[in-house]
Amino acid sequence: KAETRAKLSSTLRRIGHKPPVQGGNGRDLTIPQALMATALSWETEVIVPTKAKKGDGIPTHYKLDVANKELLFAVEVNGQSHNSPSARVKDLKKATFLRGIGWTMLSFSNREVMEHLEVCVKKVLYTIWRSKELTPTPQTDL
Image (cartoon, rainbow, N blue to C red):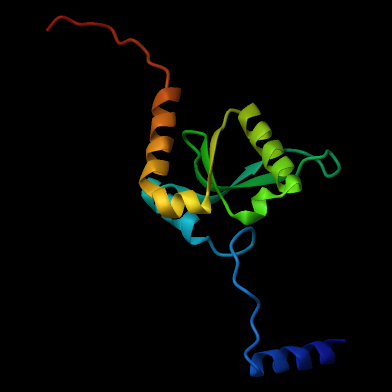
């Protein structure tokens, strides 16, 4: 009932009840995600449509923590919730799909980013550098 809901909301506000703050889907960026995005100057929470229909076994889209759409490069920054077997299966499915459509993806734990941000950024930049094809340029006489 709307009346009961309003009364409950009012009581919760009065006693200062708030849900715990966590990162992840539908919430603000985590500190490690924000640090990585700032260090790379890349977008956050980039949506990649899968063009799948409901019931196909994959979601209609994937959300990338930090990504560069021009380079098709994604960085996932994962917390403890990604250590469960079911989360690992979902993460592998996501990575496999993205690689299949041309994305390169690296994953780091929150701890890695917090403790070794510079190393993580260097790994991203090195991976980008290694993945670029070296194309010979014609020699010209000056």
